[in-house]
Length: 545
Image (cartoon, rainbow, N blue to C red; front, side, top):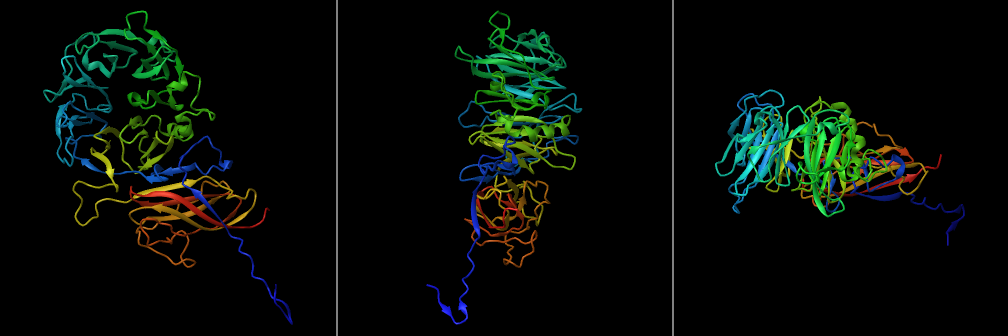
């Protein structure tokens, strides 16, 4: 019962009308098919270096120098990395080779600052070193690698001899004119440079007469033969390997059968995906499927033959999630060097590498197959990549090999004196726009508190983007994880509200604004042992008009 006085009723305290909403980490990553107004908290508008993983979203692995000085003085970057796993259980015959415009180098030793050059190319102009490779084991148990270079031709690595040399013993086509090599059903196929012709050897043969096969008559849009790829599928008569011919103009033609000289060798369709991007690096095989990179974006071949177009918004294909962003990069950098698509099984990730931008920015599209989600990597100077010895290896424009197995970026083999070796990894994400449980109601945004799990304190800053505004100014963030500010006195966009709890970081950040929907933006620095779990948002109602 209220207490009254001679002057009337006492004044009741104002009710607390602040609302708090918890938003989980967007563990389904970026999905370009989702509109800004769809209120989809499991997705995000963008995420850099913060990808879906266990517990929530995890900062990507850092990179360190593995080998450097891979040049004789005129090297223009590591264009191709060739992994080789030998037959010995001790792994003593495992090798890693780096290919530059100058030749092929042995970079098998961690920390090598003077790698051994094993082969010198005759032609070192632009395009040399941008090749493809395949391993092959003969009936006589000879373990070989075939490497085809677009300017220098076909080369063979002999494991027993430990040497690289121009391939010898094949007639019908000159080894120096080969720019592509693949093995299909124990048969070696070779592509002749600048043509729509391929040549194949007998089953099990590594030498002898090569037989010509002309693909050009099937290319409705013209062009030359860009590549031949294996595709494993069940076409109705059990699991089989088809050979897929791809022209640089974008025609895709699957063939079934094993012997091109007999009637069972048949075309299974003719498809078009737009001009190929990345030359001989335009395709990758994974999980019984083949992915192709073209002006349409990333195309899944199994869906292509079923009439699904990856560039359409109602497609459920892998490529449809990223196509809207990817096509924008293709428009801007279509003819630049550095495009590739590759599955890296050690991390279960499919990576689309894009050319370095005119202002020196490196960006990669990373698709996590286990979580069916994709985000973006950046700040990795990636020109080429491969998977070897359970790690991702990267070739750079400045003739280095990097390995992604560290908690920090840019860890040098020999760091400069007096300089901390390595840099914390920069990350950022913009969550989707959310009505915070009150559709159509204007809100005053008050506080935001992200939750991280980390063995080290995380430095970050936060802001709200309001009512579908994407172009707000970037967030500033502090340079030290020890910086702390007192709430209600720190300067917005400069202060960082820090926590002293390193293993379960829940710092309260300032946030301001007025709108019906809000998207939380977070930017910071941390280590690869850091997970983003969720974020709490506090707001107060401000009416419907």
